[in-house]
Image: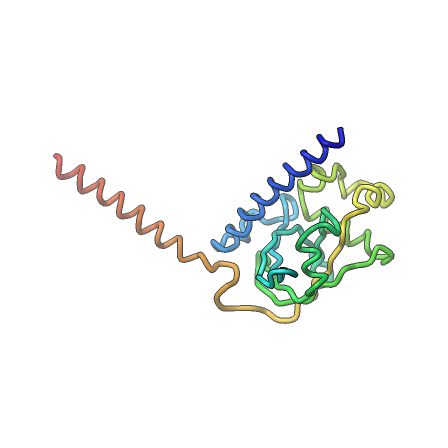
Length: 199
């Protein structure tokens, strides 16, 4: 039974890795704002530095904004690579649906009296993800039930320090759309010319 659970966990991790790459691509194509709502799933891309490689990493995470501060959660707790990376280097960037910022990440301790309130808001903003993966409705669950189900989760607050612009951020692949449009237009024109030349 334990082996089956570990296989399920590994399969789930692989699904998340694929979904993460897809979500990063969506943001890079300039589509981060589309369908990105708390009712469905509110996602941002957290840019952090690999603690061993020193390379820039991008991880999509569910988030919410409370009083101007960004809150997100590491569902795999202390084992999540991105969580361990921000412990080593809390300087991060965030790609939101309406902008790009530099920031500083701070782990909210389990003893913080506001932790469960903020955790609930992140889970609500995750839309379908919390009921599907955590098995809890964050809108109706009691604090006790919620705490039991997400006890291993880590809560992170990101304080934005400066707005970012320029290359290397969300939308850096938006040039793909005109290229696709030109290719499609070329194919259609070629078919049109071929059709008319055969008449």
